[in-house]
Image 1 (cartoon, rainbow, N blue to C red):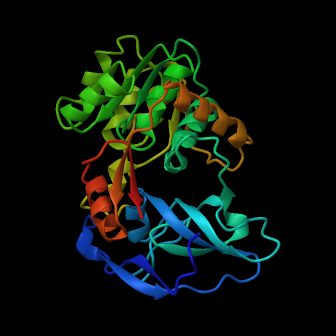
Image 2 (cartoon, rainbow, N blue to C red):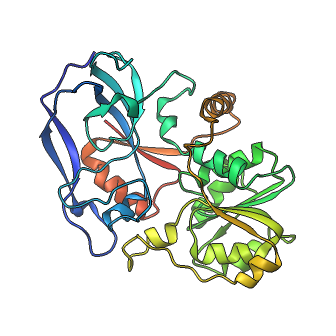
Length: 340
């Protein structure tokens, strides 16, 4: 059982970048670990997720979203898996319990017990709780209402959401699944490893032209993690009555000439009207009422081999700033996880 520490290494924002953040914009510092107060637990983090939305928070955040902006000197945060070291009475947690919480990017965290989700072994690998399969599943089932026989297009298909969305769409009965990514190497892996029928590559021929080839009859569903040209292309290729769910805005978040807080795109609203395209923003996870059922389903798929959890593990908190830089640069496929 880990003992209570006096200090914890924490990744802080050192400076707001002019453009995309690099390792030089962060620092890893030692800070005192406070004792948990009533209703709190001390957690030793085992691993945490690196996610591109940090670019938006570093750029000042977006009003109406749940996460605050980051300023120089602030610790970074994100989904983490940790082991309870100590807990005050009445929390329902005990030393040794594994929990998921949102105070990653540090070795030790004092977390309100109500913000900790105990892990019960439903998933074979605790790190899989740091994936975004629940986002992909909810976007497909609740927001886009994927149906057997649908043709599904997933933009940003090599990311944390996209690398799972294609596999889940197939398991839900989609007849054809197409993804987009930024390199031929990733495109090949989407098809050979993750169940995609085809992949289009940004930066080459127009996306709409590429997308029309594997989907000559059009697409029924879009899971959009990018925006920009890829959203416009999906509108062009959409069938009447297509259902679009907007999950992410990577085109804006990863643009070096923007702050990461806006993602403008010009679309032809005549096409939205003429094709009766339904477009909605991802509604989040709080109101699904499906989390226990979803975890059991995802765990069963993982154990049977019906689904893979694509991810990269980076060892050491001191390498976390580099891991974020590599994620933003498009180096990795799937989720990026730092192990402590």
